[in-house]
Image (cartoon, rainbow, N blue to C red; front, top):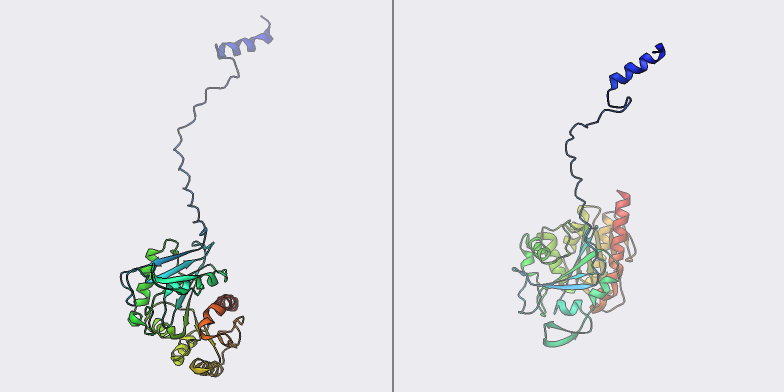
Length: 305
C-alpha cells in the first residue's frame, strides 16, 4: 500500500459507518417556558354617539319634587369622551324653575305627560354649541315655585354627596375627577350657589352669575380672592340690585389689584358685564360665550403657572 494512502485508511476506520465530517445530533438544552405577553390594555371608551339627556331620581334630593319629575338632569353632548380631561358645569335655576322645561326644546311639561305645557328654554341645545368636553348638570331646586331657598344644599357636604349619587347613576360619568367645576346660577339660583361655596365640600373653580347677584357679594368675592386661579363672572341687565351689586364687585377687584374684564371673551379672573337682553333670557343668550370664556381663562392661567 502506498505510504500516502495510510492516513486516509486510518481516518475511515476511525469514522466507522458515519461519514466523516457529519455533525453529531444536536439536542438543545431544555428551555424554561417563555412568559406570556402582557395583556393588551382595553381600548378607550368610544365617544358618546349622540346627544342625550338623562333624567335622574336620587335617594336624597335637595328639595321635594313630585312623583314623575326628575331630581336632576344630566345633559351629555355628542362626542363626549369620558377617557379625556373633562369639565362639569352645574346650572342652578331661579324662581318657578322646572328642569325639564329649562333643558328641553319646544312645548314641554314639568312632570311626564301631566300638567300644562311650557315653551322649553333649550339650554341643553345651547350648551352643545360651546363644543366643550363637559357634562351639564341641572339639579331640580324648589319645584315650580317662587322660592329660591337652597334646601338641603345648605347642609355641610350635601352637594358632594348629591354629586356622588348622580355619578353612580350616569353611565358616561368619568372615573377621573373633572378638570374644572363651573357653577352657574340664574336669578334666585344665587342662594344655592352660595350654599355650594360655603357648605358643599365640592371644589369650585368658576362661578358664573346670570343676572343673579342680588346678594352675597362679599361671600362670592372672598371665595374669588382665596386663590388666583378662580374666576368670577357677573352678567347683569343694567338696573336693579344685580347691577348695583356688580358695581360693588368692580370696586373689590380694583382694591384687590386683580384683573377685571368687561366682556365674556376676556381671560381676566373677574368679569362684570352688562347685557341688553331681558332677565329671563340671560342664560340662553350668554351661556355659550360664558363657557368659551372660562375655557380661554383656564388656558391662560395654565400658561402663566
